[in-house]
Image: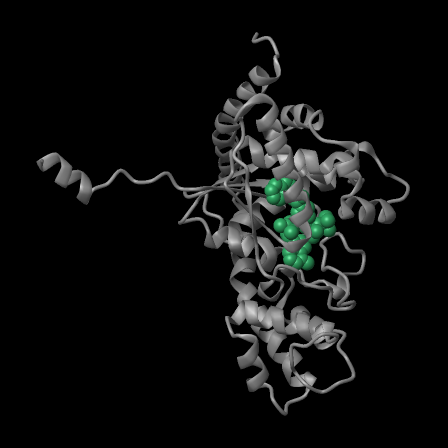
Amino acid sequence: MENIEQNAQNPIPERKKRIFSGIQPTGVFTLGNYLGAIKNWKALQDEYDCIYSIVNMHAITVRQDPAELRKRTLESYALALACGIDPEKSILFIQSHVPAHAEANWVLSCSTQFGELSRMTQFKDKSAKHADNINAGLFTYPVLMAGDILLYQADVVPVGVDQKQHLELARDVAERFNNLYGKTFTVPEPYIASSRGGGKIMSLSDPTKKMSKSDENPKGCVYILDEPNVIIKKFKSAVTDSDMEVAYREGKDGINNLMTIYGAVTGFSMDSIERDFEGKGYGDFKKSVGEAVAEHLAPIRENYSRYLSEKAYLEDCYRKGAEQAERIAQRTIDKMYKKVGFVAR
Ligand code: ATP
Ligand code: LTN
């Protein structure tokens, strides 16, 4: 009886749900990456068991300069730390350090159909943009991504709106594999910030286009390491409409985007932003958005230079991260190999 009472007061803690997400080391993170993904990565660390990766294997689907990729991978790792990913709470690792990602990719590619990969809109966009290098990796990229997620038996995957289709594919592949070989993978749920909440931040120079870190036109992109005066200037020259009203409305892409950004960094609702800027012009509004963003990002810039200069700490973190990730991923690879009928060594 005593025991039962004690157990009721101190129940065994439930296993936390697991999160996996990744970001490519293709450049300094943009405000889009931050609001659509990394800000959520940080916020979810206490409630979930989180595993985050700098996905350098994904990055080579478009041509990269090797020295630059190496440098950017370390910088991206430091940036993730600077954005508040805490290696004591979460696993943060570099994708190529865990061979299971390449192994899972092969097995899963044999459970993915050519037809379903052909429907991926990111492949169509990127192959139009890189017409001289439409390689097989660019085409099978969603399989590598499915492997990333399924290896860790992730329950939830926080990403921006642009990754929704890839996530649906990962779910389909997991279900197909489970049906064919017996339960092997957790089928992951997407965690997508609503577009008003920052799930899709648009370019400041062309608000019909996604803000993207590999964009050749840096004017439309706010990078999280930009100096405050640069940020304010970029917002001042943001493209808007010829109307005068700060209101979230169909067809006002530029203003909608600025309102989304302002709401995401201040926590203000669209209604309260509309009220606060009633009767004021776009100039005042753009200035306020620029200042709020610059203020929000300032601590990240300070943390970043500190982390990047602590080389030994950085190395220690990514080595530990890889070991922790590998332990989990290897268990899933062993299971997959057994299920498909590979002879154990
Ligand atoms: P690249 O330009 O190299 O394709 P990217 O800027 O699109 O890169 P990724 O590394 O592919 O960034 O994505 C990292 C995360 O950031 C993903 O979860 C993605 O959905 C999110 N993300 C990227 N761009 C935006 C955006 N403009 N708005 C909201 N989320 C975004
Ligand atoms: N494809 C993603 C990056 C990515 C990812 C992942 C995101 C690679 N693997 C696994 C979530 C889960 C992109 O942002 N382009």
